[in-house]
Image 1: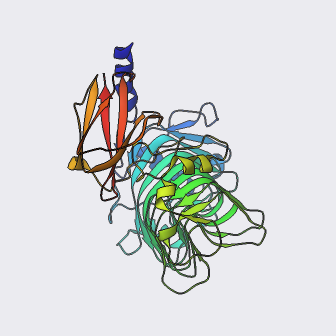
Image 2 (image 1 turned 180 degrees about the vertical axis):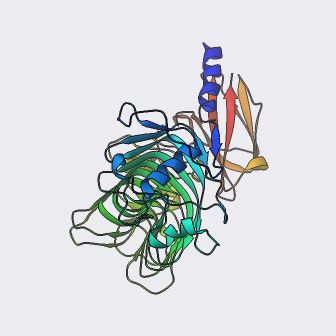
Length: 428
């Protein structure tokens, strides 16, 4: 049984190692699927994605209404100054008229990298469309459209246009991660500029705008739920760690937090660790921000210490009688809570490697933890605490693992300088 569990652990770890399709500038028609919820159109490579962009932006957008699309692989858009992205469903089409994406795109927990839009670079005539539309992976989405289960990485820098990682205008997001660095002379946001609803989503990118800026959304019409921001924000007239402006009185925001640093280029009263501005009847429930992320904040949300926001107690508070959040056992998010439904990818560990040694590894009887450690604790692959926090009695600690089920575990150590290091071990 132990051998089976040990093998299964490595199978599970390998499930995220998927093939990647690199865009070569060409288009290929989607050939699989019928566009229904149970049989979606399959986007099998970067060329299929480019084909979708071409059709929608050249006046064939109606066929996406109510249709379903699904990624089957990671995609590298191979973006640079000479190979820039044209937003899907650009606000003004090549032949005139408004363009919208009216369907559902399921990223299927894949990643799109290499998104690149830079107005200051030389671009060809075809891509002059950017000057007529907002800059994002998607430009325009109606209220009933949805993007879910997708991670996007890239860079956007454009003047006089609203910019975001996923969508600039309208639509809904669910289980999404944006790691797109963005600069705009007006409104900018990590995931969406004008959002209907966003839930269970994350922003990792640094965002800069001269007007309205939000870590998750610049404006929100309906709801922001179970979201967090770690990117640094720079705004002008109005800036909020999660949302710049909850624009409708009926808008709801709950179970969210921000730990990204916030600055403004000018003095403003509409600056907050959580929200820049709201309507009077807007509901904000169970939302928090790191107390040192901003010099002076408005009254929205609650300021908390880093120590508290890294605690099990804070995870319980965010969950609010649900099971959406989990403790950051792997230190992938610098100890701050992460979402159960979509693990945030590619967050750099702030403090690493040989400051702590854990050996032997693999092991079946015991481990030794060596370094300038103050305390340590151990978690299993599901984030369950199997060794509660213990104070270190010296430079080297010996811990029995003889009773552990075979598999992958994480040893989380607090160091004397206040840093946190997490090491992986295998118990055989």
